[in-house]
Amino acid sequence: MSFSRNALLWMSENKWMRQEVPSWQFVKNAVKKFMPGEKPEDALTTAARFDLLGIPTVFTHLGENITNLDEGCAVCEQYLKLIDIIAEKKLNIEISLKLTQLGFDLSEEETFNRFKQITRKSKEKLNNVVWIDMEGSAYTQKTIEFYKKIKNEIENVGLCLQAYLFRTEKDVKELIEIGANIRLVKGAYKESSEIVFAKKKDVDENYIHLAKILLTAAGEDRIRVAFGTHDESIVYSLIKWSKQNNIRKDKLEFQMLYGIKKDKQKDLAGRGYTMRVLISYGKFWYPWYMRRLAERPANVWFVLKNMFS
Ligand code: FDA
Image (cartoon, rainbow, N blue to C red):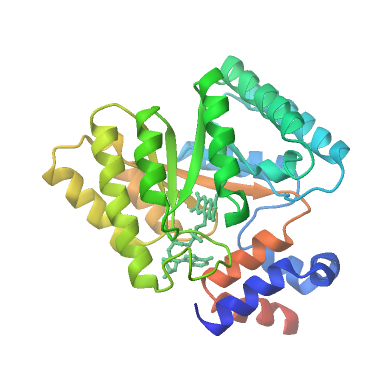
């Protein structure tokens, strides 16, 4: 892991910075590159524009590791209201959330009940999937267990898995057996080299290896898979591999973040692939934003430019 990536991930977890930095105007301005605004209305207006281009979206109300269960209750209420608005507007929007934003650190039972409410309502009003983001490795096992439990009760749930973890191949194979909906990403957290591939080249190779296992299962209609990556060489090699293996185009779904590789997003959608854009909103953007900077430390220049402009 490079020094700058390490430093940015350290900053994402630093308590003092988590409190102070979000009030700095030049950082607030720079964040706009990755999120249309803090309010759900900002995300909804943007989603309607993507909809016109044939690009469905995924919404995330930013937040993680709440310290008081009432906050999780408010998050749940906010998502329930949002589902009504999405249904009214007839937009193709799925929801993706972090379990620690619903109170996973405080009560697994409460988190389960809240997540179930959101998922049930989403099934009833939108008939679509609610995704669980994958957080740092301290949560991997617990999140997978949570997913299996909820999947047993409700079909329309999806889970994010991280290709940088050594354990993920085993998880992928087990989750295929239960017909999971899986979003594969590389992984965004600061982790020990005892549990993750340390070199980018190895993470990329493992991503492709896992993607092929997942695509084979998707081609047999056993699962839904979405590839959460902006890595063009991976995207195009998966398209090529699918063609060679007679996997239908509609089985290939890509998900990218708002503001990153906009032209590629339009290009893939225009060529008939499902391309979903993840739009984030909310006040608690600091740790999430720092992980975006860590993915491409060159983004820091953009923040600095805002400081002087
Ligand atoms: P990589 O980092 O190799 O980037 C490929 C290219 O994309 C770069 O060269 C650059 O051009 C561009 N790029 C990538 N990131 C950029 C950035 N921040 N700014 C500007 N350009 C950038 N992680 C996790 O641990 N848990 C999760 O639940 C999720 N969920 C999730 C959902 C979706 C829809 C996406 C797209 C990503 C996630 N992630 C995630 C984040 C993921 O783990 C990973 O950190 C990022 O996607 C960056 O990795 P890439 O696959 O894009 O490749």
